Amino acid sequence: MIDAKGPKKQKILKIVAGVIIAGLVGIGIYIITNVSHETTDDAYIEGRIHTVASKVSGTVLKVNVEDNQLVRKSELLIEIDPVDYILKVKEAEANLEVRKAALEQSVRDRGRAESLFNGKVIPKEKYEFAFTAYNLAKAQMNAAKQQFNISRQNLRYTKIYSPVDGYVTKKSLEIGNQINLGQPLMAIIGLNDIWLTGNFKETQLKKVKKGQRVSIKVDTYPGKVFTGRVESIMAGTGAAFSLFPPENALGNYVKVVQRVPVKIVFDKNLDQEHVLRIGMSCVPTIITKNE
Image 1 (tube, rainbow, N blue to C red):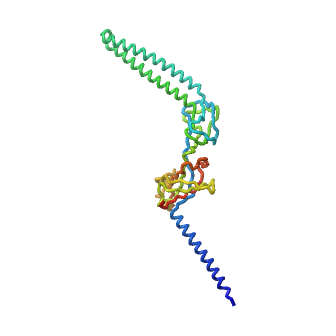
Image 2 (cartoon, rainbow, N blue to C red):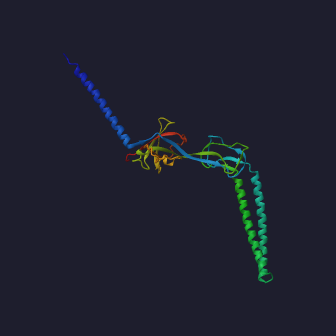
Image 3 (spheres, one colour):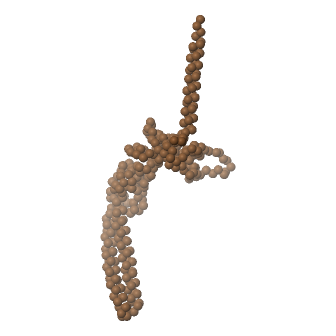
């Protein structure tokens, strides 16, 4: 009789051997990957938020943008009613002309007083009085000139422009609103200066260094991989800079692995369509192996 158990046993052994080899390969890949890569899912996109505020008070005449609108640098955002500031410029200009005339007269008076004093016609006190009057007129003219420049600058401030390319957000004004000096009116989120903050465990940072390459997955865009590099590692854990840092000297102590923020910048020209937004969740993987 033919022993059927032989081939069947060999087949089972081959399957078992294949499973073992595949498992060993998987374990090897896992070990190599974890040795040369550090990753975290506690990471978010950050960027610069430019608060737009008024440098003068007044009534809003025009609002040229809406929430979430794309604007360019130096684009006109808001216009404040300029009537009062135009009048102040005219008033300052008139005052400057008066002060100029007074200075011209004091120059002539000083010259006559100097001639009379040199000719011993008037006493020294009158000469000094004319000289003092000249200095006073000169100072008043300079003050009037500065006031004129300030009034002109305040008139320019009635038009508010975008400081950067970006998206409008947190708009809090409408036409006709009365606004005050320094009042926040809206924010512009910059397009060209965003980065990623990854909060890595302190045990992951042994091999992390500035300049290392980073592979970034953004939850909003599954299947798409962005690239960047490590720019810096924060000089303290997140807990150390929190509003209420932990107090470990109370007697009840439980050791907790701390997390350290790592700043990761995206490669240039990577987000030309500006699909990345501040606050998006990410999974960065730092390649720590020697390149």
